[in-house]
Image 1 (cartoon, rainbow over the protein chains, first blue to last red):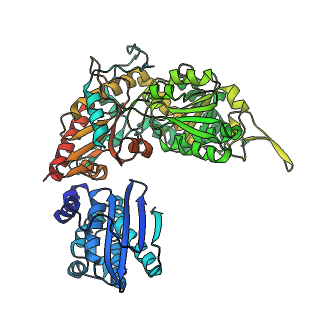
Image 2: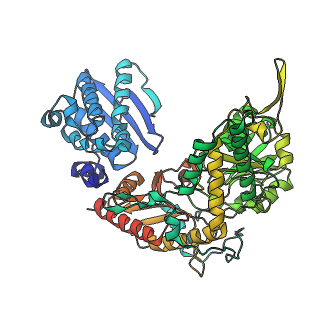
Image 3: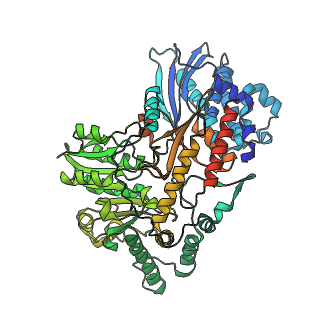
Length: 168
Length: 453
């Protein structure tokens, strides 16, 4: 298991870690969430802005390991301009991949199909082999799902919806 | 780490500052009757022969949980296989044997820490439960205006129970800050009149699980006692490393845990002065802790049983006694000195890692031993593209067989004080070798090279 460590840290992951895409908190937004992983202290503040049923912007500010930061960076680029349904579908696909223990066979999709959907996100398949790190890869995605649902509920409301969540 | 504090840390680490810390350990380390032979000791710990991939295991996470010698595991096995029954209430041979083993363990632990009698030793499930016991029972008499004093370098288990006690009673929580070099800020505490006539409880860690700092417990206990406050000491890191004599330590209550001192998980200890324990109300209610139960009310057993509701951790107590015997056979003076030598070696070796900053005291004496600190070394590692996160560092070290802890080590406020989110910690024990430290340094160089690509 431990011999795979360099396989886990794919170049794509390191690229995103060194230069995070769409990083920083921006206005406007309809929902802001703060998610924390108490076991390691990683945290992310994430905002979502929806326009016409699509993700107009995902902006975030996070502190954490390369896996959690790179995963959030990949996610922010991937869901931009996607519909809400597509976005929640991608969340579920990424979640299933992370829960697969690194075996695509269990997912009912081949690796190419998965890569077509998740793009750079496929790089985290290797992380799924390390149970202790799955939560790192999911931090940003869980925050996204929470924020999208809140933004949807509050679309048109004058005050943004803000929440705190600690994942366990 | 904020650049300002980091500058301070570097400045102080490089200075020859004398710290006003009195080391409570005996200066005569020749008392050990058996020469300290790390390789022979390692032979008692089969787990240390494991490999991680092609690398030998270098277990540098003993501040988190220590490994267990064969004799501790065999003693627990023997108890379950040959003497198992409930204690104090089983009217048969095995019940008598189990009771004798359990109460015998209490007596062994009393001897290990120099308690006046075995009645001063309460078994809990861990150090956290021991500290919660203190916070509930002593805390029940607090009122608004009363003050509890802790420090920024406490483990969460010596912070949160006191925050809860303050919420229940309206008492105020105050604390010692830490200096950039990882000491309690005693000057600021004096200037702020931190310990004063309103102080009812002072609860302080003996040896920091993050910084390694050895705190001047005796000095602060004297201050606490001068204002009539009760002194509680978290000995979770101290008792496994240092010869412990409760009377010398100056504490009224001392909490520690079994699994960090080569004993099993599931057992902790609260030692208390008997007169103090006998004044404290019960903590958890149930069987074993009572005298007479009536539907209209109950009376309670005398200490220590007053604080041991329900079936206690019997096999764990037996295992803990075997652990104490094992440590005493090697000699706590010798174990403490080995820890000092290894820590000094590690502090020097880690200087070779570019971008590594040690949190906490780094000064060494003329013999290469650290000054006023124990064997937990936490650090940050800066790479070409910024700080390398401890989670990533720990993952890469693990791939080279080196087991460390990455995160906030249950001391988030301390990390916040240093302006960082988390750190990587290497910690040592009686079985740690200099070869393992070298393996750590090599693995850190590998980690840095990977992230600097």
